Every structure is written in structure tokens, then in C-alpha cells.
Amino acid sequence: MSAPSAPRTLRPPAASPRAPRAPRAALDWRLRFAALSLIWGFSFLLIKVGTDGYAPFQVTFGRLLFGTAVLAAAMAVRRERLPRSGRTWGHLFVAAFFLNALPFSLFAYAELTIPSTLAGICNATSPLWGMALSLVALSEDRPTRRRVAGLGLGFIGVLTVLGAWQGFSGLDVTGTAMALLASLSYPVGWIYVRRTLAGSGSSTLALTGSQLFLGMVQLALVLPVFTSVPEHFPLLPTLAVVALGALGTGLAVLLQYGLVEEVGPTTAQMVTYFIPVIATAAGVTLLGEELNWNTPVGALVVLAGAALTQSRARGAAGGSRRVTGGRPLSRN
Image 1: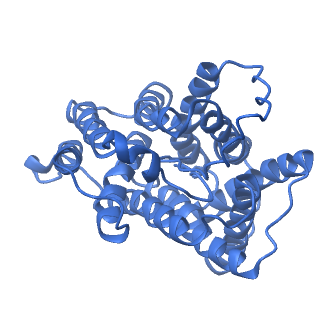
Image 2 (image 1 turned 180 degrees about the vertical axis):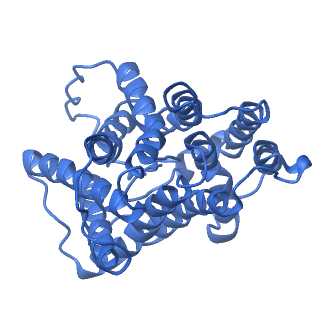
């Protein structure tokens, strides 16, 4: 789901001044923004419910299966062509691992032992990891005082969420580490795609659909080794996995791309800051998860730090937008 941060898309080519404007979307962008926030925010609850009936790798495989199906249908409707270059497919295979197969699986395993609320908040650290990595891997991303301050503030927020002053008591270290590693995996994938797939000639939809398909293939290779065929298919976990894939991975990507095209990446990526709020509300109200004071306070500090890391000088804003072949994918 999510991320979230998310979710980082290829920019469509600039339209000619004489080109006709794209038809106005039937649904106001604010409503689609709210829908995307809800979908990705509820993804962590769906993961939790899904793992009640299936192994984590099975949840991830189902998520990628139904997500790929939605994007394949969208590609068929729009008559999109798959990438033709073997080099592009090779890069997409790596991207699928870091942006889909690995983080989706880590979040599923993490939620075996940690609340969905904590998983959602850990997901919000992706912009922090992304900024730290981009300073090393991307020469065009220069540190500023504001962004460095945001990085420090964000990790203070992480320590607050985890209750560092009380020795992380009551916290499952392994599950939390998996969730944080999943959040780190996203920016690794974003940077890789930015450096290898920009200007590939294929559409964003074609790249993302192919990426999800390759992630599904990777999970299909892993499933026989670590899991067995389910003997039964419990209703609620099955519905959760279907919704996680079809809505939280497939439909969410289509909504996000539409938002990027209509209101731009800066506004569209603001959805990142709503995901942990919705994930926390869903986990507490629907799953009865416990919420201590440090969790929401630390989450707000994390989000404030993440917002600062995304701030850029006006002159650099246009040339520093992320370019990837998939969300998000997700951001969660």
C-alpha cells in the first residue's frame, strides 16, 4: 500500500502549446485525492487481516496478482504496449524487487508481530530514507539546512514512536525492523529507477504494469519454497487480499497517475502525509489496537520532518522531481 512515499511517477511529456487540453476528469481531483488517501491508509489494516488467514508471502503474491490484473485491464483499454527492450525488462525486474516484492513481503511479515498502526507510521519514514540516500546517490540533490533539519527531526520522531527513552519496552524489535527496512526499500528502488528507466520510451502505465507482473513472478518462485498450497480460503482474509491488490495496488496507482497529470507531483505526493493518520485510525477503531501517547505525537514529528526533507528551492523544484516506474507503488 504505501507506500506509501510514494509514490513517484514518470512525468508525462510536456504538451505542445497548441495541443488540445486533456478532457476534464468526471470526478473532482479532491475526491480522488481523498479516495487515494483512504485506500493506502487502509492497506495496512488489509495486510493485518490477510495474514490472519494466509502466510505473508501468500498475501504479497495475491496483492501483486490482483494489482497486475487491474493494470493489465487498464493497459488493454488504453491499448498500451509492453516495453520491447530486454534492457528495460532487466531494470524493471530489479525495480520490482525493491519497490514491490521486498517491501510488500516485509510489511506482511512485520504485521505478524506489530500493530498495523505502527507499520503505517514506519511507512511514513520513506521520505527520510529517500533524502538521506539521494544525498549520496544523486548528485543533483544538494543538502540544505532545512532538509538536513527535517532529516534529524524525522528520526527524532521515529525514536518517539518507538519509545526509545524507555528502552523500546513492549516493542517487537524484529517486526519493527522489518517495517523500517520495507520503508527503506522504496527509496532504494526509486533511485534505481530514476537512474536507469528515465526516458525509456514506454508509458508510465506500461512500465508499472510490467513491474508488478515481474514482482508477481518473483513471488511465484518463492512460494513453493516457503509455503504450501492453502487447504481452505477463509472469507475475510481472502477479501482483504483481493482488496489489497485490486484497490490498494492497482486502482491506487491509476488514481495517483491521474492526480499527477492533473495537479502535479507536488500536490499528489501530499497523500503521503495522510496515510499514517488513516492507518492509525483504522487500526485503533476497527482492530482495537492499543495507542499510547507517544505514537501519534511521534508520527506528527515524523511527518513534519518528512515535509521538510521534501522542500526545495524554487529554482530547483522543476529539475528535481522523482522519476520512477511505479508507486508505490506504494508506498505501502
